[in-house]
Length: 318
Image (cartoon, rainbow, N blue to C red; front, side, top):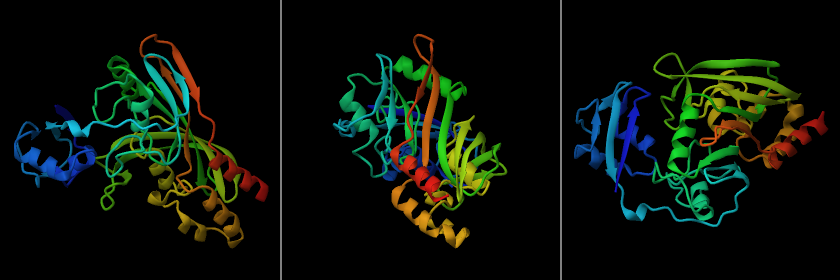
């Protein structure tokens, strides 16, 4: 079968094949290069070489042949289902679970579990059945699953039009202002191509509002309200203001941060790293409109044990 795609280039000075490798996580680089060479991929309507350098804002579209062996195998992995009807399901994703197969993660993913648990899932993307939006591997919390194509299209529209209200909880380094907002352009990191950063141009607009719930030296418990949905947005935003998320190695929140604080905090911070071995970020609340009935729906996923235990350790150490 043929799987079609269409992207607008959101970075600059990147090879065409490298750009598609990142966008098509389930497809090998050799298969992508072959598709480009055979004319299955067009850039602004033109056939280019795999090594062609993209400058930004080009339209890249094409289609790839997907073999039958790429079918996803269902796995009987426990799911925390917060809500379910014939059109959608709301899952509380555990930390450490990859959302869909790709990049070396071909089993044990949320999609493998969904295929096993649900008789019907949307099929707009054969490699990610039911997946309307994503959470990072380490991020826990609410994720929406579409059970049919109509629901998927309407739910995707709500996310694209910023009609979905999202609330996150995080444990961040240092004492933050009581409230505020972080905004600016987010683009691909020029060196680490898996990461993102705030940029001055050729990025995508982003906005996150935040409120501090507790300052428990040397960390803060913060509630975040992302107004846009860029990849790694909250992680990038908190790093940009000097308060990266606890245990977020990619965005400067790892163990090296211990040296930035008074030696009196060393013992408690070492204990916290033993308790929280992932990015301390949780998708706590979500508000959507039901794609078929039109009713407003609100969901909440309890803060997971590792973050609760970390906060209690900090409170007891005060």
